[in-house]
Length: 290
Image (cartoon, rainbow, N blue to C red; front, top):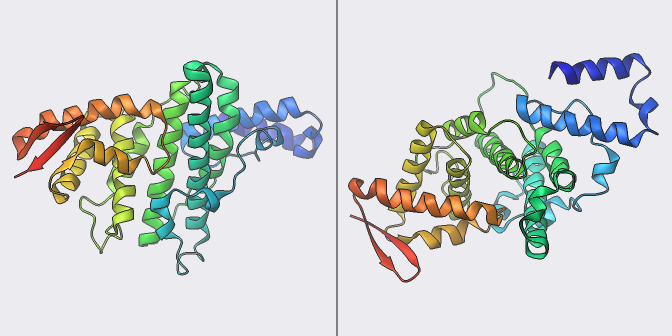
């Protein structure tokens, strides 16, 4: 981050960003480095997004492309919360990005992961927007909306890091953000914590699965798996395929499928001794809680 701040100081000393307006290639490189540094250090980007990126990415319709389970968040009382609306709009962009990646996968196959430049053009604008929604440090207690907003933002950043690591364009991991997100999510979704509606319970499950498949520490993996198992216990007998079918309504790409299959198998194996019995039922795996 020191190097990016150094770039900022040099540019400021030479007249500011306006002096680089004609040098689109340089602005693109600066923006690329800025987003990567902000992801690594969990900070807001220092530079505006390069116009070369804004023109080459998705349409950024935000709320128009919001995944179904999050539409319940857009109620009159929440529309005045600019940060929540900013994060939710970013999730809409993430959903559009996921659809674009799925289309690219269907037409080009796994070759898309070798095109780091094209992937950066697609992913970095969404990352830039979500990084800019980072809350300021404050001693004020967080409201329910604050918690949901930040949990969604962290989950989206974890999603982005997972995708970036697939195309080998990110040198770090999501481990610190996974730990932070798991501390924010309630062990049980209740009215008190604001996660008790069916839609938000599904969103919470999506976040927990993302944490579980994005290279968490063993401790965090155990925590996330325990919370998933508890959620499934609440649902009584549930097919793992049914759980997956639900969370696919949130931003999703096919690269998540293999680790999710392993996660389902591990849940079966490790939680069998904790009152989970299972049986094969057609193509899916059924969890039956005693």
